Length: 266
Image (cartoon, rainbow, N blue to C red):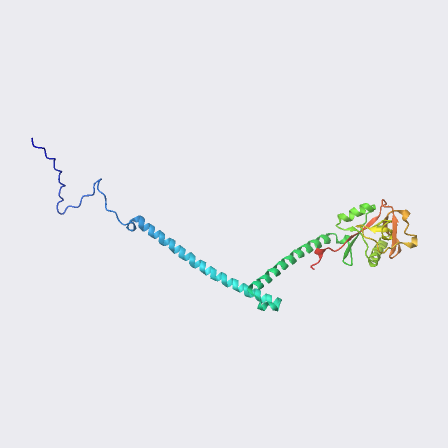
């Protein structure tokens, strides 16, 4: 028996002339276009072009800023050099670094002067509030109290006023205090106490020795039996007014505020 022949595949129907081509079927592959010819490719090209344009603009702007900055720096150096030469002619031959160094030093000094000025103004404002309570003499300020307290309380009262119970350094200062006390006609405590082992038998607050003494010899002073603390009497000869008194007695007192560093520029 002869073998059967396999069935022949049906031939694809021929397209008639003039008919449009049939669309590809589900199994047919459409021909691929280049990426740049696709809508996505065209969009990508536009985005990249925009990015490159923006970068170019930024680079141009940065270059212009750098040029302008360099010009500003050069102008600043010229101004600093002119100022430095006016301040010190020797800076005419100095380098830019040396000129900048001088400018920095001067700037620091000006800042320091400004801070000192602020401190001084604050101190002036503080003193102005109580100016009627203080008397000025030879750069110092003196407060002659109206209240009667014992010697230890007088020390505390002066401390609260940022001062000290008066410490006399020279004869003219003692004469000034004597004159003020005589006008008030009241005795005033000063910062002096008995100390047998100290020079002249008395010592100032803070441990300072009394190089010169101003006892009221007219009234028999110093009378050590009268007490251990010293006050200035009002009925006496100038620079001869010191008296001993009991430290627990109530008397007025003299505070002294000496100048401090921030009161001065130098």
